[in-house]
Image 1 (cartoon, rainbow, N blue to C red):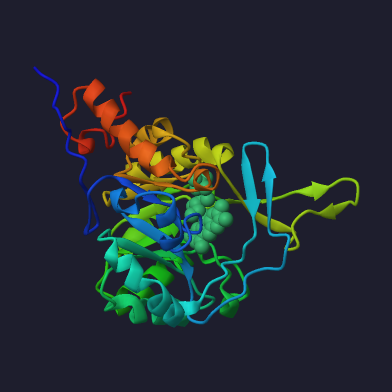
Image 2: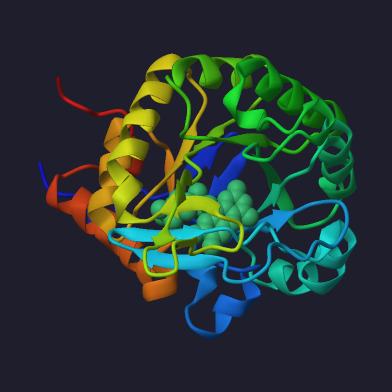
Length: 308
Ligand SMILES: Cc1cc2nc3c(=O)[nH]c(=O)nc-3n(C[C@H](O)[C@H](O)[C@H](O)COP(=O)(O)O)c2cc1C
């Protein structure tokens, strides 16, 4: 059998038609428009934008990120222009790219999540909502929505009720087992899942004996978390049937392909964008080369193809 000349790269993630399986991770690619100066963003499968809440938000005080071996710890604190600012400032340009836009949303209460979802629902060019559940639920004592399956289900259901867009909860990695969280999210109405977010972490300056970050704690991302994320993606794919967008330490096609084999339908490049903004494009090309080399006709053949 001859190898296919151009393998099929298109995927459908819970209703989002992507021309290839590669997007960018929220918060590592601005609102997409900033990166258009550096790379051809039209080649991406989708653009996932920085987290949006109801009102403009200043984020945390500086310093709010630090490089560590194998990655970085950030406590940006979800700085952003609020939902109206995002729609007005960024959506007109984002629409011009002709690429699906996944809007990452967050809130400090169920009502806020639901309201942000409702306001984005009929905005032309918005293709899906990714729900960041790694946020404190202010009304329920500050515990994160993402570390309790019942709280996760309640936020997914609240968003689901207010939008017809595909709903993609972004699961937190700091849980004992991913299966119950994946099932809770899907039962509450998720069309797809994305995972994982950063891992809670901290850094200490031993000379001053102070935390390096003003916020004291932050989230670890980059190569250091790849194999943790890989296991979570594998476990989620075993637990549910909906498509998965996988992220965590993708620096080239190798990590992306591992995620696909573990069960992901698409992948997102995060921290690597800060080092080399062409990484997502290299990942697209690398996946295509791999499919050709392995005589696969389509990228969907890779999804869940782990041999045991
Ligand atoms: C600086 C920075 C900002 C981030 N902002 C967000 C955000 O606004 N919403 C969100 O859900 N995840 C956010 N994340 C998490 C990433 O989207 C991603 O899940 C995580 O970094 C793991 O991927 P990576 O190892 O490839 O970076 C952020 C990560 C970084 C490093």
